[in-house]
Amino acid sequence: MALRAVCTAALRSGTDLGVNNARTFVTTAFLCKRRPPLGPLPNQDIDVTDLEALEKYRSYTLYLKQAEEAKNKPVWWKSYKGYMEKSDPEHGVEKVDIGFPFIRPSRTKELRERKQVIKDNKKNAELERALRLRTFKIPLDRVQETWMKISGPYQIKRLAEHYGVFTDLFPTAYFIPQVSLHISYSQDTSGQVHHGNRLTPTEAASAPQITFDAEEGSLWTLMLTCPDEHLVDNEAEYIHWLVGNIPGGAVQSGEELCHYLPPFPAKGTGFHRYVYVLFKQEALIDFQQDVRPSPCHSLADRTFKTMDFYRKHQDNLTPAGLAFFQCQWDESVTNTFHNTLNMREPVFEFIRPPVYHPPQVKYPHNQPLRYLDRYRDGKPHTFGIY
Image (cartoon, rainbow, N blue to C red; front, side):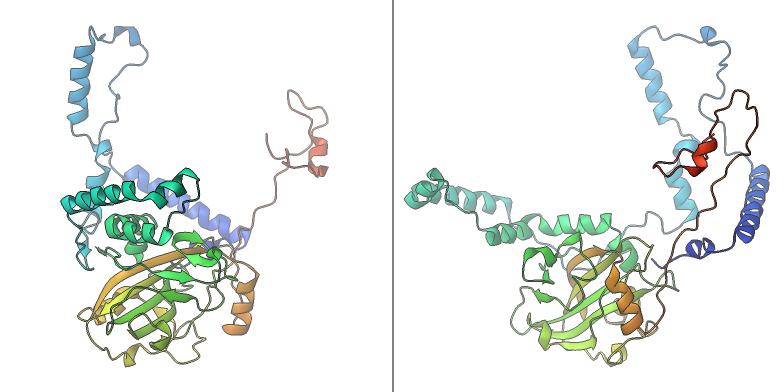
């Protein structure tokens, strides 16, 4: 999400930072003293000074019985999930499926078709000759198509849950991506967007080529957003591209509500997620309230929330496709901030305190003599380790 105040606190002076840390430590210690204990710790009643007096297990059956009793016994230090549910009412809430229902083909029909394919392959002399000469090539397009029909949508959903895409874009909701998005920033396979692969801001500097299977006469909406870039609001996003009323699969013929902006992950903030979401429209939608000025070079105008956008048009929009990649800072981000956004580039770095050197003693007793350590240039340094 947005960059938190922790990064800003790292840029304070040492005196100010030390005072704040001291206050925090004192306050935390004071609260810990007044907080009542949750309950006894495990094995707290065991006298460790006299272990020989403890009762011995005479058989494995007796040990297994007592272990099962201890496992099923409710204790406070094993109830973290329940504690989180009480403190956060939305924790563990069952999420709602806002996508299209996924209808998997019949298993009996799959087996019947598979047996028929095997029977036809055994009668194919050209296929037998290609396999024997090791010249047979597997058609990857058919493999991709079969994967999307069987288990692909569920695997993409698991990847999105692993990367926290649904948590940040659609809280308490999810969908099964049933439309395969083919997004490519280059002519070769190195610039393709899959589900969590890494690309550089230089590779994603211009709008990509996007194709997907669409019925004739259908309407779609394509969105590119980043839930990790916002510099002010922790819960907001920056919209990088928004195209609505796309006829069929022709993205270039759609209504561009916000023109494409390349990724600009700030320096020192690690990898950011850039998510493509494809919505299917029930009918033509009037997006006048969602149109950004063109060209849109203001981050305030690009502030966006996917959930608010979906709730506004949820009667006519249904999420159907998903693809995302990760990106971190490179030299092109500086050019984007200075020339495109016309602003100073934020840089988040941790200012390390100076290395502590203990005072030198003329005659050190039982201590290593490390006088030359502060003048060494080798790596890793050994000074400061005492």
